Length: 187
Image 1 (spheres, rainbow, N blue to C red):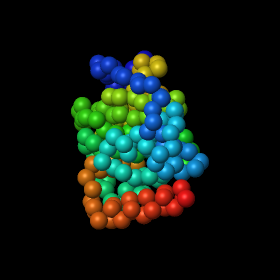
Image 2 (image 1 turned 90 degrees about the vertical axis):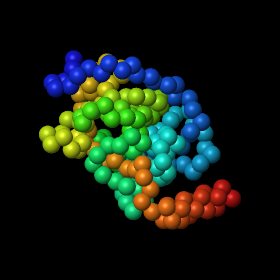
Image 3 (image 1 turned 90 degrees about the horizontal axis):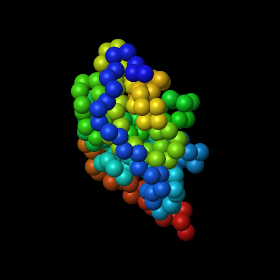
Image 4 (image 1 turned 45 degrees about the horizontal axis):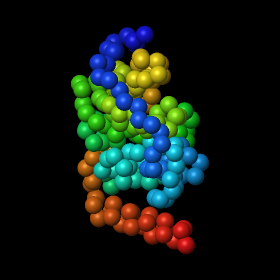
C-alpha cells in the first residue's frame, strides 16, 4: 500500500551484498566506530557515507551532525553528494546516514546507504520522500525494499552535511589528530 500523497517509485532498486571490506562500525555501535583497517562483513552507514561522499567524519552516525559544525556546510536542503543525517529514530543514541545521490523533485530524493534494515546491506538509489508539512525536509519516509512500499515510520532529519568543506585547515587538523590517535592506538 502506498501512503497518501506518495507515489510508488518507478526506478528499480539495487541491494548489494553486505559483504564488503569498508568494515568500520558506525551507525550506532557501542564502540563509537573503529579506526581504519578493521574489516567486517557487516557494512554500517557511517563508514559507507564516509567512503562514498566528501564528508570524512568519524564516530557513530548520531554524532556526525554536531561534528560537522564548522567543518562542512550544513543545512536543511538536500544536495547531490550531501549526507542526510537522522538522529533519535530508534532511541537517543541511534542515528543513520545516507548519501544523497540525486534530487527527483522538491519532495523526493534518491540516496545510497548501508545497513538501513539492520542487515549490513548496501542500498543504492533508494527513494526518500519529504513528508513534512512545510516541505522543509524535517521529516521523511524511506522506501522499503522488502515490502515494496513506502515505510510506515516517519523519521526526523537533523539536516544535510556537505558536500562542501567550510574550513579545509580545520578539517585537515582534525583528520591529522584522528590519524595520530589511531596510529598510537595500534602500537
